[in-house]
Image 1: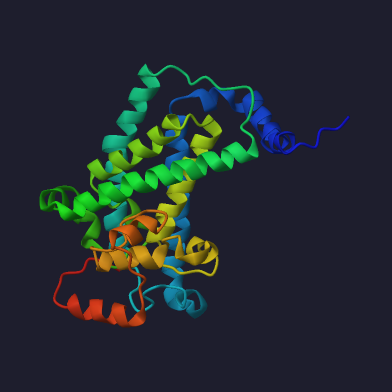
Image 2 (image 1 turned 45 degrees about the vertical axis):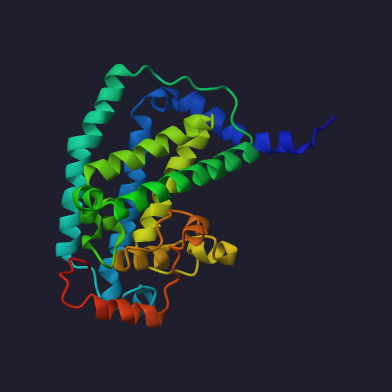
Length: 283
């Protein structure tokens, strides 16, 4: 008899793909380098696509209309400056850490069974909720404590109108601490390794979208109802009004903390006036 239970049907969705990966790519998946490779490659792919859009936007009015600041094009100077720091952080910090894991950490054991589709989705959602709370407190602290802001976080806020490469225009401390929580949270929730990798990729996609400088119709904040999701407009507002919108994913902590701000044209004009005279390295 055929079993049409929801658990069995959910299991059948991911198991064939997981079986294929185990059969053909088990050595790569077990390597401690694999999470680093998928993280870096996902980020590079996304910023390459967004940077191409940035270069095309000034001569493509239909595309430029989706930019949050259509009158502030991204320049080659912006691109090279942010790309240099990204490359520096990866070569000096990420690459040695990855090599260290590869040398001293044993291969990761892989389970035979894939997660059910429900556990995969709920695992990513659970990690999002935990990470959202952690990062909200971390981010708020780095704005409210002057020493932390000056020492670690001010670099990221040199850009008042962010674009995709600003995502990792950060101090080494910020890059490492964000990566730490992204890695640890799936372990705390005892997620399947496939779920952990999915959460890792999703986090990179969201953080890059938040900094991309575009408000597309398919952006997540337009798909999630009731204003529950942050998105590029809110994070763009955070770069211009640093006392607002600290959470990386959802809006509820900013609501509860009184730091939620939905950008409007009138508020944007007020902010631009208030920033006159300030050196802006942004696009």
